[in-house]
Length: 88
Image (tube, rainbow, N blue to C red; front, top):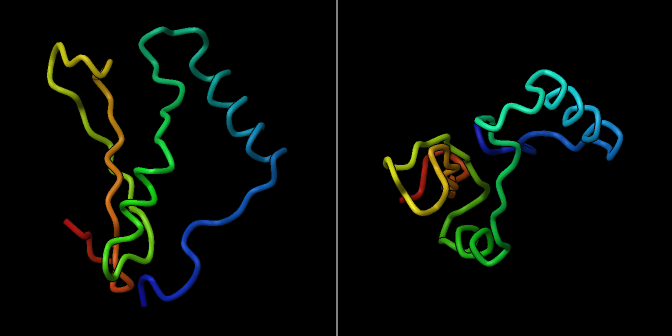
C-alpha cells in the first residue's frame, strides 16, 4: 500500500557524490542546465506540519517567461498523505 513504508532510500555521501559527478559529466558546462535547487527548512517544515502529511512529493514545473525567480525550471514541493494523495 502506498505510503506505509519508507519512501525513497538512503544513500551514502560517496553515492551522492557519484550521482552528482555523473550528472555534471553528462551535461558539461552547459549554462542552460540547472545544476541544483535550494529550499529553506522553514518551507519544508511548513509543508510537513500539514494535518495528515507523511512525506513530500516534488513536481517539476516551469516558471513564466521573464519570472524574477530565475526560471524557467522550478521544483514544486507538495505534502502527501499515507494514502499517497497530494495535500493542497
